Image (cartoon, rainbow, N blue to C red):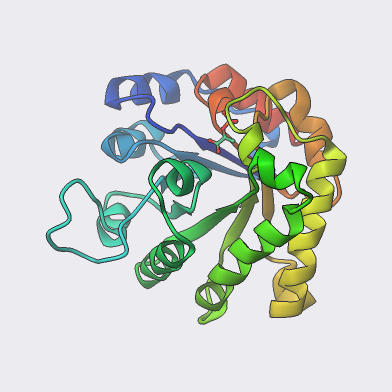
Length: 248
Ligand code: PEP
């Protein structure tokens, strides 16, 4: 089973969300995989309604605040996201870390909030181009994972990881299957140490960064790549269906 997740970022309002789901024809293999869509929080209700009773598509929220409520203008809480129909929460996406200055500590607090309210966290880690050029991929992804692990493992409950090299997001540059396998292997070893191999094997590690229908199959075949987190190529219903098909 693979996880195919679409992160719509700041695209698709309620109308476009409704259109996406009405034209989405998932391939026959979809039931064998976990298919997730992360619409904008404003489009979540439209996604819930448009998805209907199709249990093959699960929904998530792209970002939450760590507090449950309060004077935080513009923010949404995990409890609200859950009530609105989200089952998953992206946490620590590189755009949040780099454009909005989200720290490892804030990522941990968001993970805690997600878990408190029954959302499955999908925690993103990844190095910048400079860090890669300096040979610091392992150091960076392990620092990000280690900061999140106590909260992720402090209580039971599922979580997913996504390795998303910053230089590959939205750039058309994709990590090679070998690059992805190397970083995923590093993360898997740390998960094995922290959780034991049995619980670790239940934590999917997704690759994200310019995944398209024509490179998804090779990336999904790489060692330790359990799924993909896709931005641009998840916006079109036909392309999203083709990504799910590639997971065959
Ligand atoms: C993402 O948004 O997580 C992502 C990987 O984007 P893209 O597929 O467009 O590179």
